[in-house]
Length: 319
Image 1 (cartoon, rainbow, N blue to C red):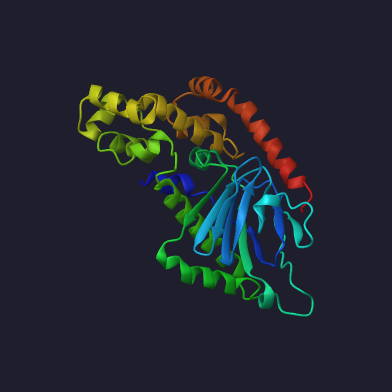
Image 2: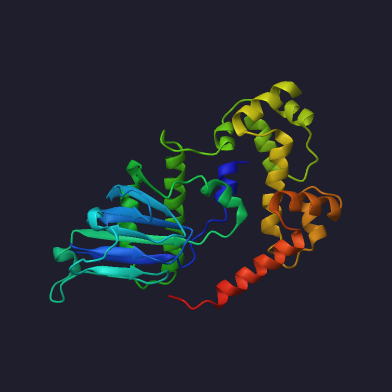
């Protein structure tokens, strides 16, 4: 199993696209929706991403930017005034689900005078599994596109507001693809700081053990059995795995099982005992003790808190 695929499988856009913002200088868009991730794709022109408390990053056509929330951030033409305050015109505050075509003079088409066109999409990532990877992201990042992405940008722009059946689901899936490609390219860059296990996936000793645990987390793995998978001695695996990942194979497996369990506990149809069995525990008591040790709360308490948070989010007014 490709672990990267597994971690990002649940990161999906659902009506997440803000839409196309047509921007005339001076302009600023302040994103205040509190999304976990925002993908920004300039379709024309360029601008500056200004994360809260962070350094401005320039992003232009041919590049993609990802901003990690939930703190607000600004997309602006002038990073010296990145808060958007004091601008002559063109200042907008954007919340999730809103579509903005901004800054155009009323008597002319927006594309006539405006130099920058931005496409933005948000991802509210609540699941614990993808957060293992996404927590390693900086507050904001910019990655150049691969050469084959230019036609995709043109297609994305053409789809917005087209009014064809299924437009939104098409946009969601295309943006999912752009997000995953941008993340994958980022973690391959020298300035990235991926978690230890990410680099260990390509190691000839630690990699097979990692993949085995992810393929079947409920299996009663031992270090000796994982060493057989890797084709090395138990001592060699334990040493190499710890050097690369920062913890031993059994400790990693326990943490991975509790991550899976945290997501399973949000499903009301599964009892705590059923969740325990799915992550490799024969009895609920042993599972509960391990979960509380690593997560700071019992499975039942974690479930109650997750359900309460989901109910509060559903009841919150949109925009």
